[in-house]
Length: 97
Image (cartoon, rainbow, N blue to C red; front, side, top):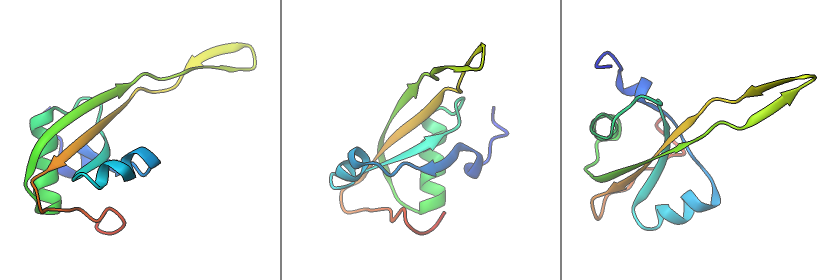
């Protein structure tokens, strides 16, 4: 698990209506590796974006069951991280990654 690099942990930013509203309160949402821990996510964000992280909350969204022809399958689980930044710090997710 320790072999994960920062770019392996942070997959991509999540840009939705809810994450845009959260950015007004100093929070940024990222898709992260499913086996990444909160300390690893915090270290990766601080190293990649050069900001201070106040807290990290994670959510695992379970994959949906989908039907293809006559067979059932499931999509992959996705882990999201809501990263709260220290007051006065921001991340511009439209550039940098």
